Amino acid sequence: MRAREFLMKDAYSFHLNDESLQEIYEQMYATYSKIFTRLGLKFRAVIADSGNIGGDKSHEFHVLAESGEDQIVFSKNGDYVASLERAKADLGEDANALESARGIEVGHIFQLGTKYSSSMKTNCLDEHGKSVTLTMGCYGIGVSRIVAAAIEQSHDEKGIIWPTSIAPFQRSEEHTSELQSLVNLVCRLLLEKKKK
Image 1 (cartoon, one colour):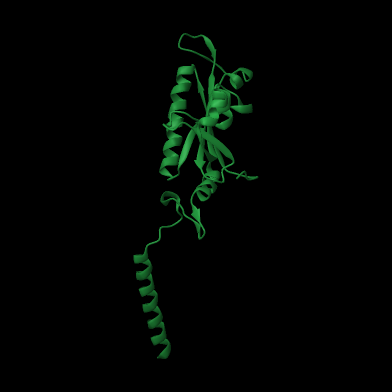
Image 2: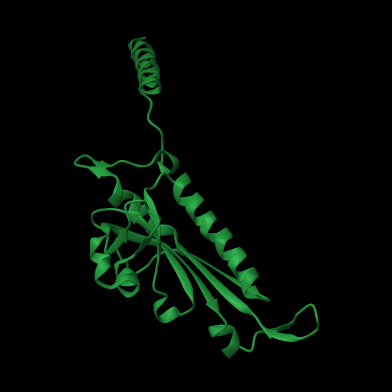
């Protein structure tokens, strides 16, 4: 699923305090969830390891597909959903008792804290005139990966079964039969004109 080139949307947020970062993080989490729901995709938002990017908290958004490169695990009631790596760190051997599925990562959001803003000296005056280092959030969504993941999630031996919301066109048998009638009429008229 990893292509050499892909289209990605990145966004960053800067905050005076952790409470503001948490508020925007929750809004972005909800927004990404709405996007994937409206696209008609079966997905899970999972607690993830922030990896090299760093930060205190992150969530990956995975489209569920057997061909997915990542294994995600979750409790039966859905209260806990995480990447397998994160679950092993959080739960140890108990992570093996969770249910699992394969996923294709299509989005990732991070609470970066001050990791980057400190090194960039991104300071601002707060409401009391005191200089504070801004906290950061980072939000990425793989626009072109969504299309590939939708195909991986929904296809059969005849080809792609597009979710209605992203299908390039809608097929209607009524319209097809009306169009065929119109084509037949035009052909008859052309043949009659040719005979004259």
